[in-house]
Length: 205
Length: 400
Image 1 (tube, each protein chain N blue to C red):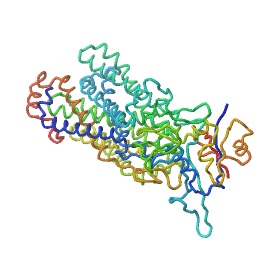
Image 2: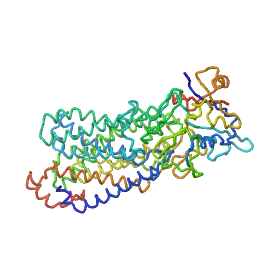
Image 3: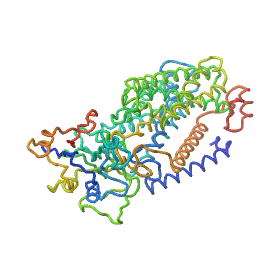
Image 4: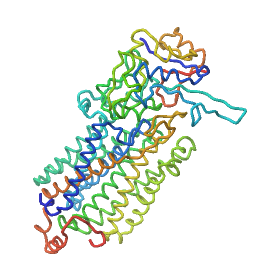
C-alpha cells in the first residue's frame, strides 16, 4: 500500500510564502482562500519576532491539510464527500458536499476553506492546473496533496517550488523513502498529537 | 382559520416578516453564505445557534405530554394538546434552520442516498425526522381520542425526545478539536436546557392561550408546571456547574476557554445566562407563593428562554474564538485575516431568523385554530367572559 505523507524541515523554512502562492496557482484557489498558510509562530503579525531585543527569535510553520490517518473531518462528513483515498490522502468529492461545514468544526488544524461565495479569481481568469476540478460556491475545499500532480507521478507543487528544499514528499509505508527516513532520523513530530488524528504531515527541526 | 381572522393585525405583520425572511433567504441562495457574518474562522453562526435553540424549545411540549401517560400524571394530560402543537412547530423551525445553513442545499439528497453512519449530523437528521413523525402521530391520535394509541406513542416519544437533544449535543460534543464542546456532559446539558427552555416556552404559550380564552389551563396545573420548571433549572445549573468546574480546575487549556466565557468575548451571554437565566428564575419559582402568580411565572419563563438562547450563543461561539494552532496571519475572517474568530450576524441573517420565527408563529396559530377548541365554546361561564374580554393574542402578564 502507498500512504503519501510529507515532512517539513522547519529550520529551513524562511517564510517566503512561495509554497502558499504556488499552491494557489496550481489549484486555482480563489481570492481570500489559502490551502496552504505559512504562519509566523507565536506572533500576531506576519514576520514578527518573539523575545526582547537583542535576544529575538522567529520561526515559521507552514500549515495545510495534515492528511490525517484518523481524519476528524472524514468521520463527521454526513454524505461521505470527504474520504480517505487509496493513496492515503484525504480528498473531497465536491459533487457530494452539501456545505454543512461539519468538517470545518471538526478539523483541529483549521485546514479547510469554504466557498462562501462564487470563487473570485485575481487576475480575472481561472488559473490553475487543467486537471484540477473547479469549485462552486457552497462547498468546502482544502489541500489535496496535489492529487492531480501526484497521480501523474509528480511531486506536490509546494514541494517542487520550495526554494529551500524544506519539504519532502513520499510514501510513509516505504521505510526506505526519503520522507520516512527523514522522519525516523530527524525526530519528526506531528501537530496536535494529543488529538489522536495521526497526521501524515510531519515536521522536523 | 379562525385565529387569523381574530388577529388580523398580528397575522398581517407576521406574513410580512415571513415574506421578508423568504426574500432574504433567496438572496442568500443567489449570493452564497457570504451574505452572512460567517467565515473560515467562525464557520457556524446564528443559524446553528437557532437550530440548537429550537430543538431545545420543542422538548418541553413533548416531554410534558408524554410523561402524562408514561408516568401517569393525569393533570398534565389537560395541556397535552397545546404542548404537542408547540413541540411540532418548534422542531419544524429547527429543521428549517439546518437547511438554511447549508451551502449546497441542492445536493442535500446526498444525505439520503449516501449517508456516512459515523456522522452525528446524519443521525440528527434521522432522529429529528422520527421526532417530527411521532409529534404528528401524537396530534393525530389525540385528535381522534384514541387513548390506547396515545399511550403507545408516548412510550416512544419520551426516549426519542431525549435522543433528539443528545444527538444534537453530539454534533458538538464529539468534536475533539473544540475544547469548549468536547465533553461527555454536553448531552445531559442539552437535555436539561431543552427541558427548562421548552417548559418555560410552554408556560408562556399556555398563559397567552389562557388570556385569550382559547384554552384554559387550571391554576394548580400552571403552578405545578412552574414547580417542575424550577426543578429543571436546578438540574441544568448543576450540570453546567459540573462542566465549568472540570474546565477551570486543572488551570490548563480548559481554563483558557473558561476565561473567554467569564471575561472574554462571550462573557455577556455567559453571565446573562447564569444570573438572568438560571439564578433569578430559580429564586422566583422556588417559592410556592410565587408560582401562584401568573405574572411572575411568565416573567421567570421569559428569562429562562432568553437565558438558554444566550447559552446556545456562548456554547457555540466560545469554541470558535481561538485557533488551536496560532500564528499570524491566522485564518480568513469576514473582514480579512484574523488571529481570532470574529463574528457578528448580518441583517440578512437576522431577517431570515425573524422570518422563520414568524412562519412558526403563523403555523402555531393555524394549528391552534384547527385543533384547539376555544374554552368559551365548551366550558364554564367565567371562561366565556374572559374570552370576550380578551380580543387579541397580545399578552400582558400584569393583567392576566
